[in-house]
Image (tube, rainbow, N blue to C red; front, side):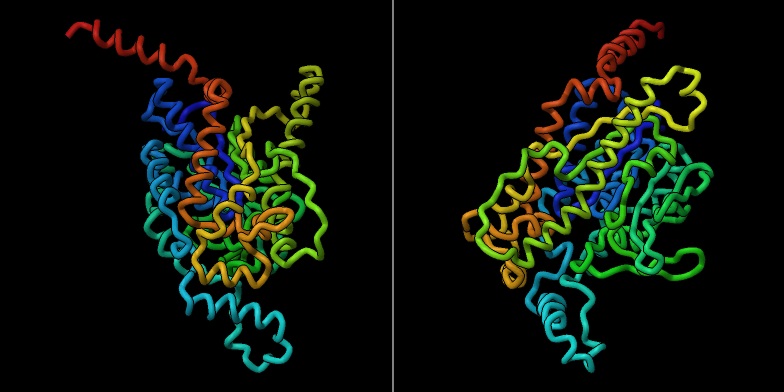
Length: 414
């Protein structure tokens, strides 16, 4: 069973940056054990994820009958990550995808007759399918929903056909789909294809074809056009929210770099990806805070007459700039991938503003030195807010309650 009140977990996108989420979850599991909370219950009744956060969400949901084990499994994957588990990093794979893709961008008009040879993305992410099959046992999900270990799991993707942001969800009870401007929700039996679609970073990974309303449509990364990443969890019944970001909200103010020339493709791409992955969450959190403050000013009679309701939320996001951490680990990428990215301006060599293209690299650095650093940061950031976390989950009195239960059991007559 899950804990009450219903707590929603929102995991955002960010490619390799999602390692930070795993560190946060590891710290939460530790604090839960130390507080003496009931380990038989799942702390998150509603789990919503986007992009790489969708993969973490699904992996957590599929083992939600043992939260500690679910987190341990995630830690094991991210602790020893290698880029080749996500995309082809061998010479042949890079030549067939990235090298041809860059060539087509520049010479496509001259190579129009070679349509069948055109790669669909910078990198070939077919290895990710094998990783999902091993790490995300979606076949367990129906039973966990039926036994009420979980209320709902939601995965978001962006449709290239209709231009809408779609939340696919699977729930324990019937939940009416919702629709808002340029975003809709659809009840579905979630598959690994939904995870591949949600995590298909534009241009970097290929789109995935999914069924929608009886028709096929191509979908890409769910962070695109995601105007309200918190909304699905509320629609699915969450009464309070833990939101884990992958940058921007609590990061130090960005330093001003000297102008040393026209920005490289890598710098522009990194800036674009940050806009896709990071900005929407910051705006949505600000919107939620404004609504909460406004509702607090209304008399009770007026609050009851509106459909809006205050939402208790705890937002945890990096205290350090993840692109600065990525800059220290660019050389951890496979040599073939470094060469490919070097062609668009990613370099570990120091320039006046530091290693170039570090922002773009921060999304693709699925390598253990980087992911471990992010996990350590996530754990440290969460433990530094220990009192807030315990208060949010109401675990501060759990240790005393557990001791009382044990004492009562010991004193009970045989």
